[in-house]
Length: 490
Ligand SMILES: NC(=O)c1ccc[n+]([C@@H]2O[C@H](COP(=O)([O-])OP(=O)(O)OC[C@H]3O[C@@H](n4cnc5c(N)ncnc54)[C@H](O)[C@@H]3O)[C@@H](O)[C@H]2O)c1
Image (tube, rainbow, N blue to C red):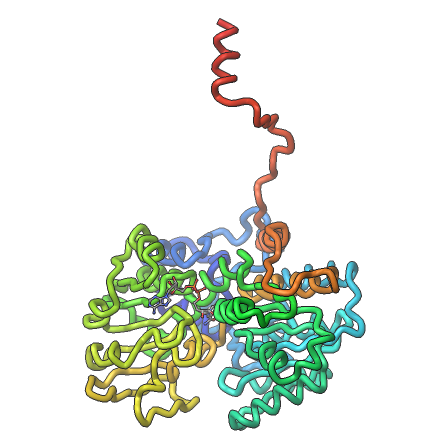
């Protein structure tokens, strides 16, 4: 077997399978990795093993067998809708375990659930699971980041899907309203708070039947927080995003991983080697990306407006600079904030000619393209030249949209298994506490994270260490009491 170069292998494997490298076991033959590549794989969150049958491996779900040449790995993008959803479902055992348990405890029959998420095979698995539990389920999806074969498959399984790639913005708006009218949802699973806000503003009469909302992402939680601050949030919202098993894995691992491999697909596997990369925003998403491109040889600078985040970057071994300084020398600028106008027209003017500009966060106009006269986003461009008025011509990736879900396959399957396990827990929580939850934002308890993590460890052939049940802790016993007791013995 040829010796494995991690950068090339990771790009191809990730694009072909959409499986998560982070949290998986990389099975390689002894000596198959080039020098230093083992460290890169470990930096990407992989446990490298040259023995296929380590303890507990026999049933482990997250073993990636790199002894099979990546050319011979089946390309999931070429599967039919049914095959693609089945493939994802086989690698989502945590959601499956949780939903089997939820069905025992909670009655989903007669509950109507509207799901507004990017429509990919992983999302389809969540929809399937909710429908199998007895709920009436429908999905609304924007035109820019969806998989038509999945939409067709779900429709064939009796799930309403409001999505048409040719919709104008006005038609998409109407499509969302039509789905609301059809479903009259009791629960909304939202991504960016758009669907629930639409319901609250344009179909207020439906809100009487809302049990609650489960919000997937940082920017959505931010929007609900603003709504709450304005006194306008009149229903319970579970901030799924804020659960450790979501943010600590999806944002921190999955997004970094898939944004890197998608940018490699566009720019070449070696695009990061020796490149000066400025990452704007050092939350979990920025951190996951920065760590991975550094492992691939990039020289990374962090810009964050929060001094605490900037200091964290420094303690992680990155330089932290003001954006005005960092942007001038960067070969690539990557926005990871989820904040509108993070990259302004002035910033674009200061960039080097042919420098690459990309978004890995994902809110409208995170790059101020609305200030670039004559700019119109077109879905088909993975990368295009952008002539900045009174500035250089730079290279814009994916029309300024989140690169992993527009060009790539979105966050990896095993990562979404965890995120959707939290979503399923949120839905179960809303049903179990129907009518008793206060209006406003709330989080799931740490016990939910621990329960999901236990299952996720088990399916990987690992486990948490068992706790000593009684360690004799007594708060009245201070070091002084202990010292006196010792004196008495002398
Ligand atoms: N593409 C994906 O698949 C995916 C997945 C998960 C989250 N997201 C999105 O990515 C974005 C980031 O997520 P996160 O969890 O890291 O968010 P976060 O809010 O924890 O971190 C964002 C960081 O950006 C900083 N920041 C804000 N405005 C800035 C500015 N103008 N200049 C410099 N720094 C600035 C903040 O101080 C913060 O440290 C969110 O919009 C989230 O919804 C995308």
